Amino acid sequence: MSTDLPIEDVKKFLMGLQDEICAALEKADGKAKFIEEQWTREGGGGGRTRVIGDGAVIEKGGVNFSHVFGKGLPPSATAQRPDMAGCDFQAMGVSLVIHPRNPHVPTSHANVRLFVATKPGAEPMWWFGGGFDLTPYYGDKADCIQWHKTAKEACDPFGADVYPRFKKACDEYFFIKHRNEPRGIGGIIFDDFNEWEFGKCFQMLQSVGRAYVKAYVPIVEKHKNDKYTEDEVVFQEFRRGRYAEFNLVIDRGTQFGLQSGGRTESILMTLPPRVRWGYNWKPEPGTKEAELTEYYLKEHDWVNEK
Image 1: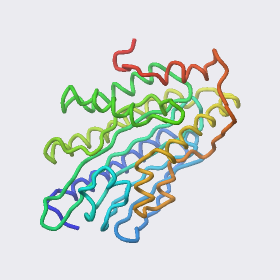
Image 2: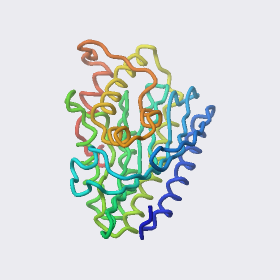
Image 3: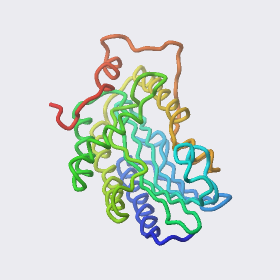
């Protein structure tokens, strides 16, 4: 599928970003290495799935690149954009989820992507999306501040209003409605973004994509050798259950991937390796576990937190 947009430049950046992130995470883990599987999609396109597991730090993770294209969009895409019905499309991006072994190291998620839809005789419709968010199990105020300050630094070159908007969008999106609680402490997210000319939007995508390692690896290094107990692992598994619920019930990327005939193993790579559910389970009041929902999973202006 051809357009007049510099799509190959975006693809080259995304594949390079996948390489950079994998190298940084392997170094932080110190033991495990990513295993790559290249795949093709029936209907057009393919990708590179890279998974890591059973490491010194990372229990399960993946950093995936995909570039898929085809004719006709799935219902998850046209429900909010009926003008795109019948369009040819292509979507490319890097998406990742890291589930650490140590309950004191947060789970992290990030993705950056480009979507293009075309119809004969019409200008291509395009937009960028992406962001990153953090899901701690045991709260650390300094981590939350550093995570959000790094996100703000990635946004600041593009306008003072960008970070507040993207933070608000992240808080609203990563909210588990049926639990009435956030998935984590947020970060930034943007979608359907084409407010500026293509080149400037692409620059912002690059800034956000490169900020993930700057935000996450220092937190990993800080906590990867923390001592932890089996009870803390049990709590981690209960909270991972919330993560799985969000990804399976709410996440638009999961829905789009499955409905568009994406590769199931790559899409569901985001799920935690071990989870736990208990009937009407709640942490004991006054504990570190209760502090997560009572303090950390509340709305904060983390950049200005003292």
